[in-house]
Length: 177
Image (cartoon, rainbow, N blue to C red):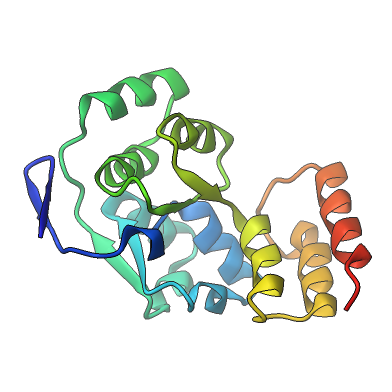
């Protein structure tokens, strides 16, 4: 067991631990591919993030992999980051968990949350990164990945620059099977 901001936390290998913000959960569910999280042993969802997903995409919470976690008291670094990057409550709670589990992978599609997490030296992936990762992990084939990426503008609420999406698709297409 470990303590984080006065809260007792269950011991875990933090390299396999994921802390999720709302965006990737919502967008993966919109694409019908929440199963891309299945190779992570633990996906922690802070209470405020859970409420946000429940409001906007409740079907995403039916994924059995997700663990709702009550927020601990924020440490001073998180308070400073929250002001600097104008983080919302769910992002603040996720940052607090990241301060407890510095080796965890943080999932977010929010630019400010990504920058704040990188300030904590956290590893960060967004929806695009998870989809691309699924090719390396053998969860999806190249054609499926390209189809998912092309579907993002029509099937999801993810805001991604068209040029970035085109570049990612081109990189996937360039991979030899």
